[in-house]
Image 1 (cartoon, rainbow, N blue to C red):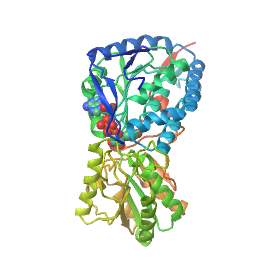
Image 2: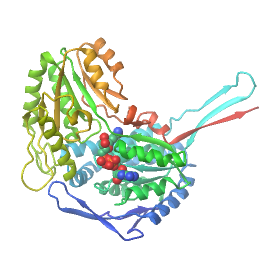
Image 3: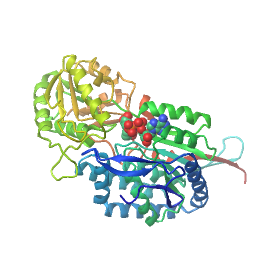
Length: 476
Ligand code: NAD
């Protein structure tokens, strides 16, 4: 591996303590790389660099920032295979999933290069005083970005691109399971024209201490986090000390509802996508599948056929649909969800057995008759397990779908648009996939309600997370 050190002020550094940690290939459990682990002095150095770079960058024209981001999109698009390869090595996901992620990640550079030159302000007359009210958006300040392992590239670019478009500098703390992709992105950003110090990357084996230190430095103004609700909650507590601007993309527990008037071909395809994109290791993954009683038998049979057909193996190989989960604890947690559901009366239609040998593999699994008290109904499975329940009445399924502290995404399948839209409006979720198993789109505001988060990424809203409104009261 070429890039395994800390990236601070445009230079590669071994880190103040010289400590390192291993990154493991989940397909065969071998050590892929030994990566430098950042400590407090490294965090300070990154913030010094960010401060100087932001002073310069925030005064560049929006057009200049836009063109640097556009160049990043072009460069990354030309190297999708290279990034996909690295994503598969450190995360495990199969080649097709990794390539889709690399493309999705690159698209945030294109989208925010377009948004960079479209930031609106406002001028109006004060109704009573004769003053003019001028409203403008300004860069919010240095942003600390903390990203998860399930999308090593896209969860980073979804934050870096809008931050840079807005005129901010960033310090990124990638997940310790998957720091290599983010490090490998840095030479590309340099080539695109990102000045040194504007983007700094600090992998670490001590995330709690490092991030807490960063969030208590007076120069930091934004914390943007993607990860679990439990860690997000802790970061919100830390952010409160300096009243930081928080953007929180947290966990999900997505319901997927198939009504009796759904087109079953579309519903099966959408369910496969919502469940198996990223082998279920996605905050958007369909966690609870509610199927109308009248079509449940046929739906279950067809979904089982599709799931059983998927080929499991090392994601780097051609023809593999499902790679390993990211580590042993994630795989074992998935296995425990299945055991728990079965002990409460669920039936395994396919899968459900951990294969022998190296690698953190878990087979695509379908559970039917999942009871409401099963653990997987209340917590994120984060793996390739489709848990099917049935329903008869709209009111019952809406109540059950909303009966969670999460509110990221829901999916609805129905051919009756009037009925479907009525249902969508009653679901307490930040996003709804209607006759679609995929909602992620750089042009759309991605994010959740309730304990799934605060703020939105992508769309027009994504850049506002890195901007502050300033109002000038003027007389002339
Ligand atoms: P995680 O919360 O364990 O870790 C996320 C990041 O936080 C990692 O970089 C980790 O090193 C860091 N971290 C861990 N403990 C920390 C602490 N005490 N202080 C500061 N940083 C800390 O989550 P994960 O296991 O990497 O990712 C899976 C979770 O992320 C799931 O819950 C999933 O739903 C969620 N997720 C949400 C979205 C979204 O957009 N809403 C997208 C992807 C993943």
